[in-house]
Amino acid sequence: SPLADLGCALFLLLTNNCRYSFFEGEEEIQNPFRQELERLNDNRWEGRVTAPISTSGTAPFLLEEESTSTTPACQKLLSINFEYLFESFGKTLHTELSSLVLYTLLQSSPIFAASVAVR
Image 1 (cartoon, rainbow, N blue to C red):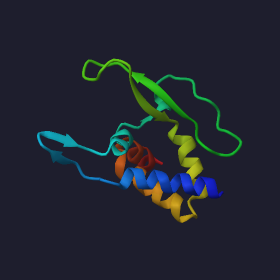
Image 2: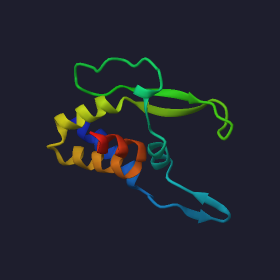
Image 3: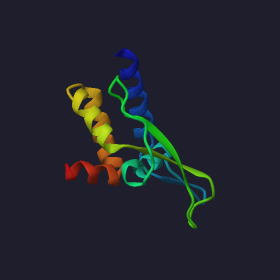
């Protein structure tokens, strides 16, 4: 659909703009969207109940609270069922945008890349 294509294009623009970190003064500046993809988790293995896959074939996202000693309290992590995501890509991989989104996820998220490699 045209709306999904625009969403994919926006996702690609946000994640691929300013890919490399740089220093502004003494502070390191990184792309926050790329940082979120690096921390993307598979929610199948965390004991959380997920919503079933929708009839449109899209994968549901969940936001989780991470509470470890190295991160601030109440920090939200993006989590998705990688099986549903893999199935969604299987249905739409014939399009150029879907291929680019898959490639971006494989390059940005080591956990997602390991999950795809196992399949």
